Image 1 (cartoon, one colour):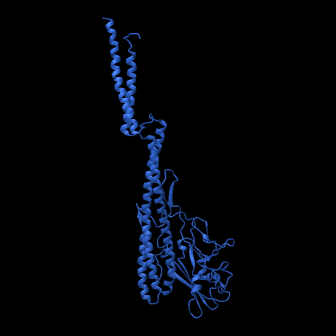
Image 2: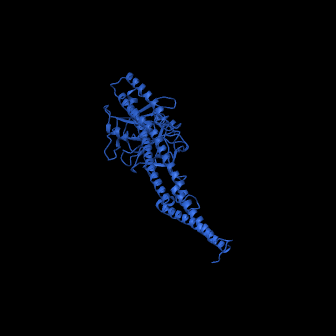
Length: 440
């Protein structure tokens, strides 16, 4: 090798190695300090992009979990209000049953009426419960109800299949199992309904040809209710708030009557039947079976879709929706729009009010069940989000986190090489000085 002084190639090579070792040691030191294998796109371009997307996913999942928990808190607030409503309705039914007992005078019933009025006022307060300034169960968070609204619809599924409200005489009507109702010519059929807080009762004497439709075709009944049926499908009972047909649960026949006017203004709060024999006693079998007209479609005013949406996913449509139905006493059939409250001032009106309270309880319990099921779902959703977040975090760790033992080993190696390169650079610099001995 030639002895030169202008270009010290050995020192140049050693300096390059020293620079590489310094950079490698600095990179290892950064990994050790941060605990991450990838600190920037230069470390691993594809790995950096994947880990950043995972970080966005993890932060989104954490917010989803918070949303689910907040949604549960909101629903628990609504459920608490409805639980109070159910308690009040249970108490009111006791009061109404008491008022229907003739050990009470009308003066006593007037006192019970005052208790009922105050309890109904409390139902209004319950319906106005709020969460973060939003009213929950006053109808403002209702789901879609198509125009013109839904019609109060009652269906009786306790009569023998094939029973015709127009063609089957009352004296020939049978139970579902084929046993006769025991209605005879000369008996009296009494039908009562409650509308706008007022009780109306119509009675007629049964003859051999009297049918159920004869009762509903009387002027007082025909003005507010009409027959609803589908000749092609006797299990049809009405139309729900979305415009979809509703059928009996078992697919069996039903006799159906519905209000003439849609929405809460046309709401019929209760429908009560009683068959009185010619000797003045009550035919309990016939009364019980005819009294099985249950509300299968509740009256609701038309409404846009104001359902609450809980965003519980990282995609736009990963959400849980729930519409909270109107729980005000007007919607429950206990108070008219003008403020008239359910009347229990007489024995007859108190007896009829029992079915009204049953219908109101059914509505409140249905709403409570719906809210409870969605609350339960949000609990499962929160658990699933937590597991998903943990798994995504673990996946990100595999890509981004540094193996501390391996990185420390690499750092130690590069540190030793750096020190060795520094020592050799000193030696390389000294090699040029040996040329001076030739010039002396």
